[in-house]
Image 1: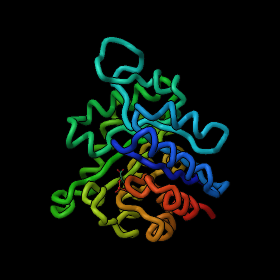
Image 2: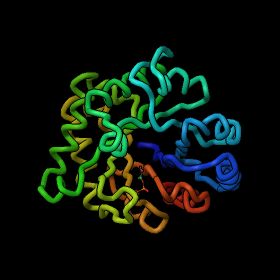
Image 3: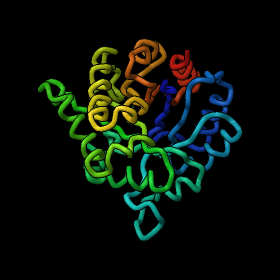
Length: 251
Ligand code: PEP
């Protein structure tokens, strides 16, 4: 039985004041005991969020890490080991905004994934097709190729300690959500690709759905057999809405 995970990606949002408010709101949420919850603030706010959520059940992650796991001469980057030291336990890799706007290639994504794992951080590998790719009927092929990048380089064993997030690019921040059936089809294909290598690892890996998830559509999405929670962008900036999404993932 996979334990659901609901993760909030705060993207490039927040000031010290608004982050303090969000922390306060999160501390007041009644969260289900059978769901893991994590938030991903900007690097700048990681320390504040770690301190503000101390003693609670919400884990803190980072939105990106360097391709090198250890500190060094890489101006502007943050090493996975530094994120761990700052109190992070997870890190997003391969978010579509980084792939499409910031040039993270499949090869870079593999290196970041490996750097995260080398330090004991849980990588959350984001995969997803663009609208043009979906309309061209290439969804499963695109997602399989993105997954293969990591699978071929690091082996299926890498997924014993990782999370996957399927996030169709056309659903991110657009208000358009994949239907529960559309999402389930891709999640099942991802799990199937892993199962071809190792059924036990495939059965244990959590595959989150992301793309305009809100409390109103969360229950149906999270009810699908291969959807193990969500990666939440916009809606995670509202503590009450995020709390409701977390509750939707509970039993
Ligand atoms: C995201 O950025 O990972 C995301 C899913 O965003 P949103 O929920 O706003 O679509």
